[in-house]
Length: 274
Ligand code: A3P
Image (cartoon, rainbow, N blue to C red; front, side, top):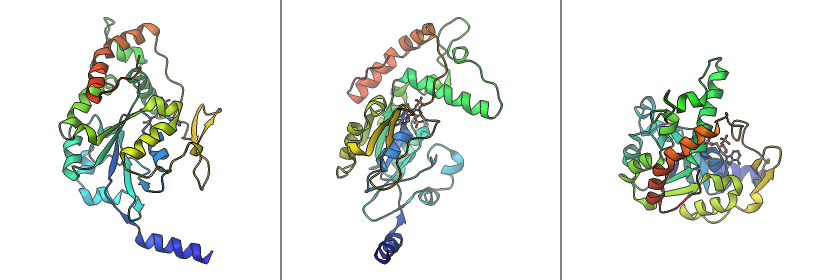
């Protein structure tokens, strides 16, 4: 026990807060929390638990890099600090600001079928409003104009136009500095996606298939750390979606076909989206 206490004391003495070497920039509802939690299984990684919103919110950005660094977790020499704020991806000023902090920072982008992402995004807003006792219009009323056409101005739809947002990041960062994670694949089987992330971040392969188990009650994979308690993500992750009629869904998929293709060209990869 004494030896362990000494080791802990030494570790605490060596711990410092560092700016992130990698940032999960989005997409909102893409599986960003799952990715961060799963990556935190790696002993060479220290993650910021809470979303920081430094590069996308003026009141935070104004506080400067000292403030940003103070939001980071304590890390040991050689550990990689990682934060996730899905709001960065669609924030127009974020790419330039991230680059100004560190042009070599590695970026992780977890994507998911953009139609499904939109429904998940709506469901989250609906839930938040209900909690505050506020009403919210049905999804189809927001997604479709009175004439039945897709309303391209609907915010949650805008956030699903991945090519537009990625275009801004690619003006500031080379393609090779952005690693795209398939969020749908992460749900089906987390390990291969995590192995890809380890490779991209040049981490030793320390996350194993045995770190995950499928929890039939939750309907998702949960985490089995090497030391510590097994845990699932909270109930806000993987909750039932608000309904969207077949006709509206068809229109949405048709609308997204071209933006999706543009995104596939940008990332050099095709996804099986709606
Ligand atoms: P749904 O709630 O729509 O199913 P984010 O953390 O970016 O908000 O993403 C939330 C999404 O993460 C969830 O969306 C869920 O599908 C996905 N997810 C991926 N892996 C998960 C896991 N192991 N447990 C729970 N949710 C997971």
